[in-house]
Image (cartoon, rainbow, N blue to C red; front, side, top):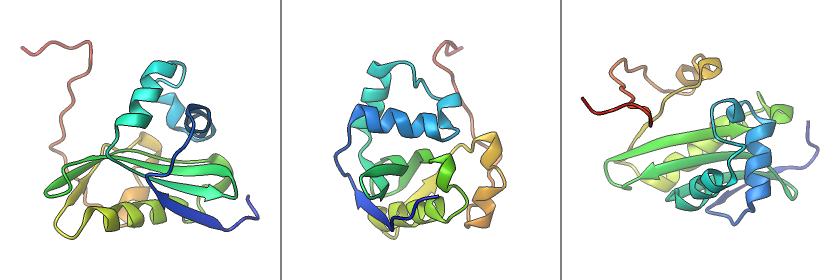
Length: 140
């Protein structure tokens, strides 16, 4: 657990090393290409909205969002370092993301299995109509 107060920043600069370390220190590296620096760099550099959580100079959380800022935003990643999970950082990252998007923008996501119980607690509504086409799958 950190003794530093948590500071939230919108689109703050971060290094690939900080970004990848956070994914490894959370459970997200299990489902993201943390061993592929080229893809991780693309993920880091091409998201139109990132909100980060910092304990001093340590990156402890991130909300990485793809959005048009008007109608919909896809919360691609919500990662919080295991050492500070269950301390409200994830919830605040979602609040900060929502505030940055504006009042008319819907926020959607695909939950990690371990997070299925978290999202209803912070106000998300379950939607069974999500569909995924993986990179190796063909459009039929």
